[in-house]
Image (cartoon, rainbow, N blue to C red; front, top):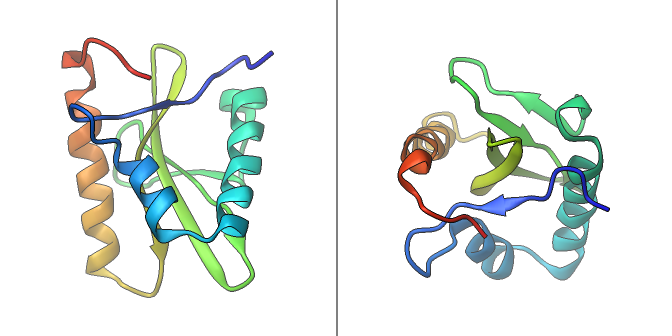
Length: 120
């Protein structure tokens, strides 16, 4: 039984992390994300580095940090009502400011959560 089932942030019928997983990752990369997600569902807040890291400079944002060969995959999430909620996904590169936009977008989505009626 999953102690901490993962929810996905959504805007209507659009689920940004599901879209990222489906359209930007290979089946093998999705498998790696699934494995890390299962660890998160089992261990919850007790899961730490190297799988999960708190984002510095943000309140209540963490990143799931799966990697596949030379690809660093990042899923930014928050804890909402004792449940991890996936907010944003991307492939990390040495992007600098481009990576920052993913963090900012995740933070904006996090701030909308209390207004959402349901998470799936």
